[in-house]
Image (spheres, rainbow, N blue to C red):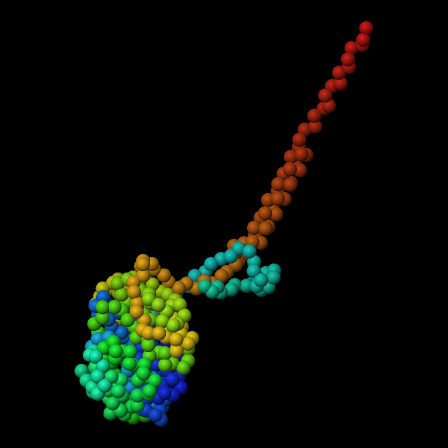
Length: 365
């Protein structure tokens, strides 16, 4: 998934990324330039692999993501996204048209054009840290928080402040007994003083009897959001609803066997366990993030119809470098001329018959 975001200060926060929220200290800023994610689901287990590219002056940040069940976290393989990008890339084809258009001779130039083608809430319960790992540049804490206030306490102990709007946005997840993955993001190089660049991907894995992609926190965004999502499942998938955004658009749909492709896709094979998988790439825009009504839940479509985005380059049909329509007109004129000439010659060669003899009637007696 690719999400391009232009952000200001996040301590408000003015934004929440596609699946999670970023929090920095009061005097810092972080801008998420790209978020690339893939979601894999086999009917009982869901995996989310995501990679962030960030810019800003914050020495560190906290990234919070709600999950429906207890999650394991490990470093992901960045080559997964290059595999998926290659597999789902649009194709370019040439299609010809016969009659000249406005940009073609004799109206204009030569004129080739491109076509468009968890438990019940408890007010005083502290955060339960169910796991903590150091993964590359990440300090990952897996939390079971039964109240946003408990999460706020944990953030405060780790040098961050939970904005009021984010606390309110998290409450539905508490009511649904979800847990959180909280990640402390740090600079790749020690001593650089700021969090910047493309971070190592994280891979989250948790039990789920439905394919859900957390989106509720994106309603905190102050600017329009765009979502591009790779979905890997047994069938072609689609969102149940638009959840307040524009209609989701399928950019690619097709069954893929990573072991039998022309090129080996090792990262994709590792994520899917080497099994064939149906890949669906979905794009969606959210012009008014405040209208986002919940999380994306995806379901299988009625049929596994394949699809690939195709861009067409329209070209005037030519034969030997000459426009076909000109040749057809010349050919038609030649045929007409030949027919006229043949008719004239046929008439010229036709023999002239003598007039019939005049019969004189016999005289009357």
